Amino acid sequence: MEAKVSELREGLGERLPEAFAWLVHLYTALGVAASLFALIAVYEGRARDMFWLLGVAILIDGTDGILARRADVKKWTANFNGRKLDDIIDYLNYTFIPVFFAYRFNLVGEYGVWVLAFVLIASLYGFCNEAAKTHDGHFTGFPSFWNATVFYMYVIKTPVEFNTALLIFLSILVFVPLKYLYPTQAQSHRLLNIFLAFVWGFATIGIMLTFDDPHPIMVALSLLYAVYYLVASFAANLPKR
Image (cartoon, rainbow, N blue to C red; front, side):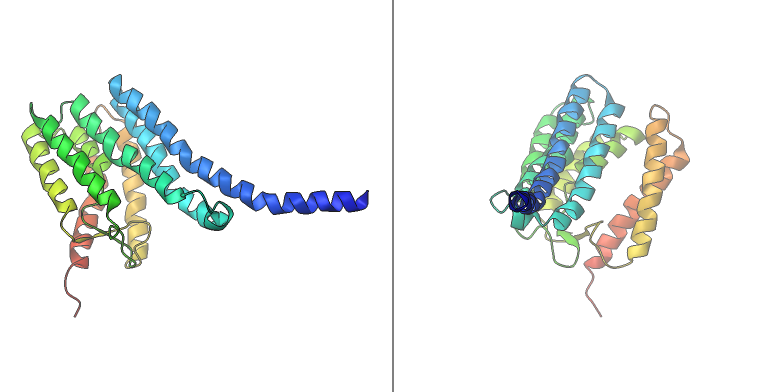
């Protein structure tokens, strides 16, 4: 009897790491649930709800990698591609839903749907480009931060002509092999990155809580990180002395 109990325990012990790995994949997959609810929010005209839901998706995307490495998912679920799962969900939350949002809330002009189609195609290239991420913590080509792009367009209420031109410009930059910081992996100025990311998060939550009439200071603080990100990314492309 004791031998059978011992065998059962050993069997369960062998299965636990695999079960944990599958739970991590399930956690990643919750991002697609956020996608569905965000898409419904856009369809129903609930702008703030969509951004909250995309915020949940960003939180999942920013933490599942740590869990995946801890669970060693490549070993315990070798036949399941977690990276592909992550990319599918990211394309929905970082590109497709923000683009649909831009259409639904008239952020582009009358023929802007063609511009939005270009954004979708350019972003597909970025996701499928094997060189899209470098080993030193950078993206190659403009990363698909369309969620942040349409967020500021909507909050600041920039003109549709400006929005259309900016979307075209950023879509072209997807194909240009310049370096852009990978916020969670960049090693240079790590403490500054963390501090400014914290300021950005605080200010962005402040904007969300007063969404219909956000305080200009909160908007300015939130934009501070965006400006830093662009400057730091530009500096990463300068030749090393």
